[in-house]
Image (cartoon, rainbow, N blue to C red):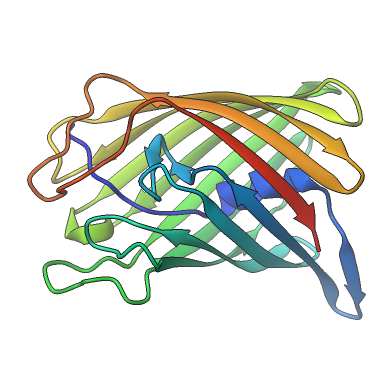
Length: 241
């Protein structure tokens, strides 16, 4: 299936950001956490959302029992969003635990204030379902599925499924890897994306390094003018608020 430059960031991205650590504010009815990140690129499912440029990102999360909600934002740039464009995500869901399996069911909305929507609607939403478990104490395996009835730029139904692994080498060093498949109705070929990386926590900051790429099947369709799906190495610095 041909590719497009599409945008996002969501619960999965928030989950990665949470690796920065968690400074929390206790509230009578729940807990609020915050995070901020500076990154050399914003890569979403193997595609740069900033045309290879740097990104400033951050968000807040609220948790109360199994319920969670949050918001996250990043600068973005593409053929439909100017270099000063913004992506704003809103999400909510439930994260129950059944035996050794941690489940997560939620909805994510992706909004692009100021985007040129004359040709097609840029904003969209996805439903998410994921399951995680740890066969050994230091290893976490996660399977996730994302579904959108109408993807960004009105490209029809879209499904993304991913397998991910995280391994805690120590209290300060972590390793991660993922592989995913994106399928969009109006693009003829699906594509595969993968990444490997690591994090290092020091003095309240988390430093991250990630290598990502997509397969050779990725070609931009007529509905999407420009994409940046080349292999990339991304460096990030994150901190909990």
